[in-house]
Image 1 (cartoon, rainbow, N blue to C red):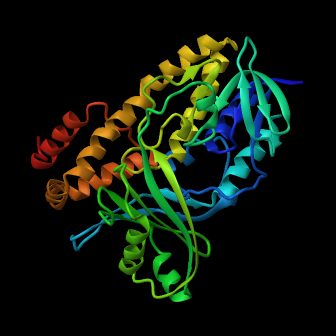
Image 2 (image 1 turned 135 degrees about the horizontal axis):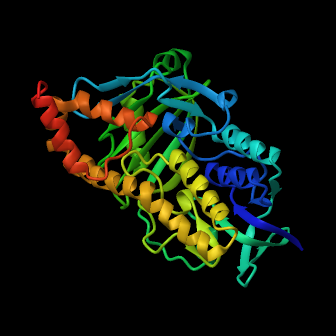
Length: 381
């Protein structure tokens, strides 16, 4: 039976980077992937600079487009909010190419990739045994990086405590005229769906269009998507492929380690509650999990304690702040728009700073907002 110090389940950004940092320290790692790479992955594919700047290697070969500004449109408001930076605020990637690049970088450090290996069960003991469609593998640690549905978390006994929201994404080919017009900007259209937003992400030759609601209830996403096409004034859809999915926008409440298993990325519930963007926090949590294992000296329970501590220092407080902001942003539309008419430039600049990683979510959100508003009202003090 093959034995490794760490088995990573899933080949997305979280799993790939956890494997990369572990292998960098000489730890034996295997990645188990149920599909064959490169494979299509449902995702808007907008990588914010906050995540890109933390990557230890260049990814420009898999970037379709870079945008140095973003625009937020609000239903019923005439002028969108916009902000520009001297770095690419959002880089557009197709996840098949992006994920595959990260895996190839990990493989260069000695990571083993076992494709077409679907996890079917785990026998927990002193050394867990992973049962796959292609045979058994033993590993001292298991890193669950298998997304929002995370079969690994279920096998390890986690109950569902995350909030998962519905989303619908389309890969859309439009007429050359429409593509030329819409390919010039990244746009988010707030309130295009109740308590949510729509997005338009231009890729190399097509648009990634999507819609998501932060309310976990039955809703006709397709109907709102059709309205969004009308809002974008798309005259002709040459082809479109729809993908429905769920995004976990709150972390699990019952921990991120048990039975030698660490949860990272969407399996842990680390997507940003305001934007539902998950790639940057997936990259971050993958690195934190690797650091915890390394610093523990490969002692499982100690690694779990270190990982929890690392999460509580920065990542979880940021997500908690974002949850508070998301509640106000999506639930109090009239008040929000009234404030944005007056302080929209400040709010947009703050959000862009978060996107590019120039600042973190403040741990005391309301105190920070009051302080900034005071600065705006009294610029000379």
